[in-house]
Length: 217
Ligand SMILES: [Zn+2]
Image (cartoon, rainbow, N blue to C red; front, side, top):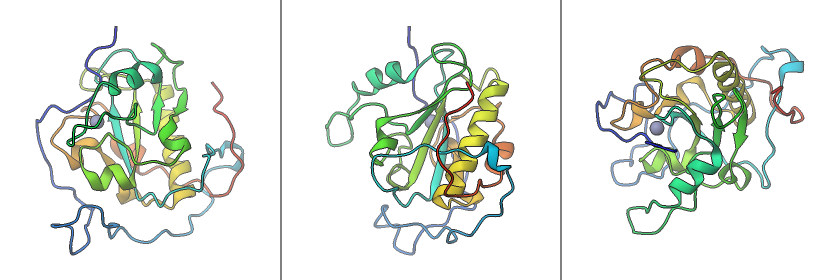
């Protein structure tokens, strides 16, 4: 049974920190943010660990990675997809389905550490995960199965999210200060106090341009 997928409990709203907005962001929330331009990252991860997931279309100019948990003990892409299809946006239009771009399993519903891209990554469409237009439009939404207010993610989940963040940084030119927790941009505890954010956000960029390779599990 799928319970409490999503993470919108208003609990706190810390300042966005390093995230800076364009000068007109008070009136337009879809401006490209003033995150520093992409830099050429050094090859700091051995090539044999490099991987990426191909999309069906050219990659969008992503500038953020927004990290989430499901706030549930179990879950998979199909279950979240079905649940999100029941939601409607502010205009009353139904969501197209799962709002995230990637989901990482915890061994309960999906294999532990498995990274599964969704249709939003394949067609490079905006997410429906942040609750903030800027981060939905320019942020890659990654959701880990689990409730990290109660327990930490599994070791394989941490390894996988670091590999995914490294690949996205390298491939999309996303800077470390563009990696944020959901709770950094909206009033929510997501992804939970046990999520190892510093370790994940600071993982070095993987060199861009490598051929895609599936995860080892
Ligand atoms: Zn969230």
